[in-house]
Amino acid sequence: MWKISKICIWFCTLLCCTVLYSCGTPSTVEVSLPPPPAPPKPSEAVQRLQAEIEAILNDPLLASSNIGIKVASLGTGEVLYEKASKKLYHPASTMKLITAATALVKIGPNHRFHTTLYMGHLEDNQTPRNIYLKGGGDPVFNSNDLEKMVEKLVEMNLKDLQGDIVVDETYFDAVRWGKGWMWDDGPIGGYYPHLSALTINRNGVLVRISPGTEVDDPVRVQLHPPTQYMKIVNEAITVGHSEKTRLTIKRKDGSIKQNLLMIDGVMAIGQAGMNRRVDVLDPALYCGTLLREMLAKRGVTLQGRVRYGEVPEGTAEIITHVSPPLSRILWEMNKPSDNLIAELLLKTIGAELSGSQGTAKKGLGAISNFLGEIGMDWEHYTLADGSGVSRYNLVTASLLTDLLVYMFRNFAVMPEYLASLPVGGVDGTLTRRMRGMKAEGVLRAKTGTLRGLTALAGYTVTADGETVAFSIIMSNYHGLVSPRRALQDKIGDILTRFSRQDSYEELENRKRDN
Image 1: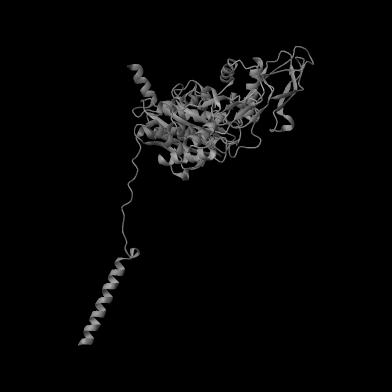
Image 2: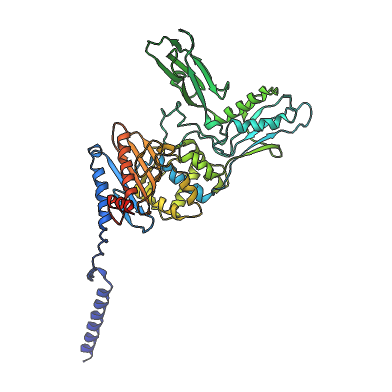
């Protein structure tokens, strides 16, 4: 009897353990979940909009290209259209939308840049007095601003200075180009200027070239501003009216390591002059040289040299130039798509948020943190510079549109952000685009261009007064960019004409009837 009881107890225990083990094994439990709800069917008006955009994208011109698009309503949050919006593309200059957004949110629209002039102490008659010029990353500092600082020095009745002009660019590091910039970028055109915390005249000179008055005369070359910092070797001559003309401007031996410009070829008598911007090397030394030349014009001679250095503690401040606010500087960055401003702004973000020397790495880290704070997935981007010049940058159309939506809803900085964007058919890089379309004067967007890539991202207002954000990236093509831009413009115009109520023609008829 006792043996039978033990067997029963053992069997019951085994049965309980089996049941408990089975209950704890998820693989043995099948759960049937209901299918996710189908997305709501777009309205007939939205379907018409989508069909119009598809018709544009079916153009044979885009047959071999990759295209990413996302269009979102600011009023309803509805995605009106998207295509390959999560694929990665080079942003080109639409990268400036990200840099500008981070700067506005993190350092504020009222941030100003400072450039300060100091004078060394005169301890005894044997000690040379140095002049110190310290840069604070001001991207729009120019010769007129420096002239006002020189006037302040002249008021001190200085006649003969034995010391040096010391230029201090330590607010930033001394890395001159963005990561991934190509070795053959520049030096003509002003698109890839060298970077420095002490910047002047966009770190370039304007070269003005015109023919002489007689055959065989050398062509006339003028620099603006006039300076000895850029050396000129002029081997170009003037020829008669009927002769074929050609002119080349390049660094000596194709090098970008010398401020020596070679001008060769011919210009015809009466031919219109030409202007070319040329980047300078070592921008801080360029600024110091201009300071020395301006002092010399006012009778103040300097016995020393222009060199790099740091402002010593306790040095007397003479005058500080304060820049316009960041909100105004963003106009000068986004409307003409200025690469220098974007790169200096990137390093400024790094300096201001870290409290230490500004670098691109610190700036990019701050941008990534900002994107994370507003819900952007790090898998949707890789960042290398602030301007979009680098092909190491990768973003999605979805990220650009979502950023635009966030900035529009951030009232603290939205007005400044929108105001910085080019307006279709009116200004900036959109001056000649969308003319005669409904988008003219309405659509605001940032352009982006690299070889084989064109992008457009911004805002427009529909026929119903509904604001939409959009981004369009077209890549992997060869040939002219203008036909692709024309297709972007058509999409922008379709969005501007869009109405949820009626077709565009019906809406126009109703307006005329009323």
